[in-house]
Image (cartoon, rainbow, N blue to C red; front, side):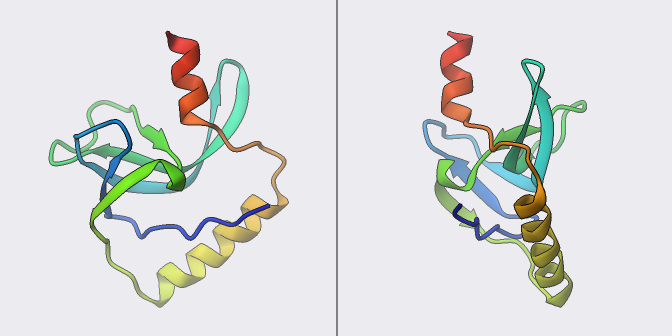
Length: 106
């Protein structure tokens, strides 16, 4: 199982197939889609709009086309990343695939 090198919170990026900027506001996000639990590397909001309502935009590290700006990093962030990696390793929730979910919507 490969491990994700998570980007810091506040990172602004563009995902493949889009031109709109997203800001990372959550990492290792578990959710239920089609009655199945899945996790995604990132939860994001539109940039510069911010969070509209309560809907996060989910995507994975491999979906990123371009990192526009990297967020703030410090020792606390590094500890959080270690905890996140351990939690993902211990979890039995499968990683979601944005591309497969988009194909089901068509």
